[in-house]
Length: 101
Length: 101
Image (cartoon, rainbow over all chains, first blue to last red; front, side, top):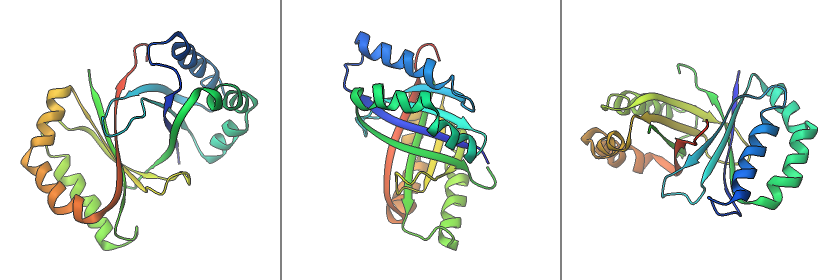
């Protein structure tokens, strides 16, 4: 069963800063290059009921593809070098289909 | 610009109860019948990093379609009669596309 992995987050940078643009460009280039990543998107979060501002979303064919992504050196390096220093707050959610959908 | 409206939540009911099944069936039937609601889905939330268990998602063509849904009597009644009494915890997020995606 496929899994949609999402992270909703807010950067330490202001939204219109060059640092924010560089973060999104690098996230897209690096993470979408990892084997098994499908349907990679970055969206704006616009509900006033949350102060998080963006969502990263990707789909994996199955649990083993998701685990391989988590352990891939490009992902591990991105988390250490970019995510932890540049992200102020985040929440992960992973989705699978419900029977009938 | 289209808007994806999502709510991630946890019911007061146990997941395999008839009450939970009735909630999901009624949510699908009632909310997806409201004009302007597109791509209605219910998914399981499976990340251990959140204790919320399901996501409702729908897409609106624009902000005015979203506002009309919010004010529609079927939505207002569902919130009062089912959502508030049966949902233990929830978080809303709304997404729009980022240029380039």
